[in-house]
Image (cartoon, rainbow over all chains, first blue to last red; front, side, top):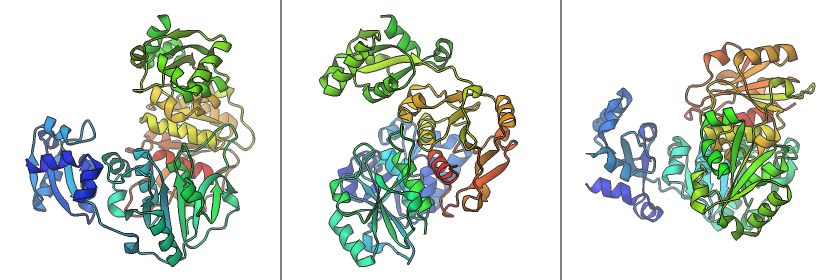
Length: 252
Length: 252
């Protein structure tokens, strides 16, 4: 029963921060988790998991790795999950305790900085986009949703398990960027057109909240503002779409 | 009361198709609707709308345009809305009855083709992305979610009111592309790398379902397949992010 209580408790950000644990829900997310180097603390499985060959195979893999498994009723599992149908499985795993200094940076590398990104779906898609386009690490600045929230984990589609995702303060980021020589550029509708900009070797790109744009803390630190030219009657792009275009276009 | 019954009925695709009407929910969507040329049939307003200056102004605009308004209780409004908090307003408006032949196409133009895109949030973000990046029209092929579904309307953030969004069959598309000289290219992980491709003057770009990729119907028609090179351990991009990168990179 301990695992069930723990999974329910981990729906709260404070519990995740205290325990350094998070919950991954559904077959695909748990498969991705097992492919990563993140230690898995245990899994809750419900009868419905064994209704598909893929679910059966996943249960076997968990067993063969010696991961603690608690069998629960479908309704109990749902009580520990954020989704309505977690496909009969949630796993509890360790949040990697990384800091900025653990990020391996080559001479040509990219960082994505999330400035008060509140929507969990957007945050997850940003993590997925960054990982796919070769960004070394994604940094969550104050005001950003907890990256280990179940909705973020789901939208990130495994990217969160494969690349460093680090919460940090603006002061810590200042120090890090200063010592590593990364310029900080921001996505901003009032900036220079993207097509006119020369790609630097190292770059930290900041994206802000869709509704309110970049925070004053971000704005004050930008070396450059870059804009994606848009049709005049359309206000903005989704933030993950904008980040995708910028990261592709500014790839090293 | 007629408007309330109508709005509830329009939650079903069949009713929208029969009546050629759809529902826009919330202050921002109704503001965007009023900025467009789409005729508004009526609006339901609940007391909560008048709790903000922006809501009050919107109610006044509706009145000054001579649009039929029905005042309902907050709970009644919720029963006609897809969102939990429609901010005290839903509007009923006409679905533009456009066909492919109504799309104005210049010598350098773009079409986005949705091939069995089922997720309404993705479909809406695709419409928004296409409009922002200068695409003339978005075409929904069989298997794609109804573009006038409330979730699509919400995610499209007004783009659906500003640009043609047309449902059509593959046969109708064949005829149209043949007669207008548009090549059909598809987004496909196994395609040529995007950076090696020369941008054509006219282009119809097809994007498919995230899980299952392009349908056989789409694949059989492609002149070219284009890929966004991704990190080897990340399976795919979100379909709207991928479309954004391709449409920006292949802009006329």
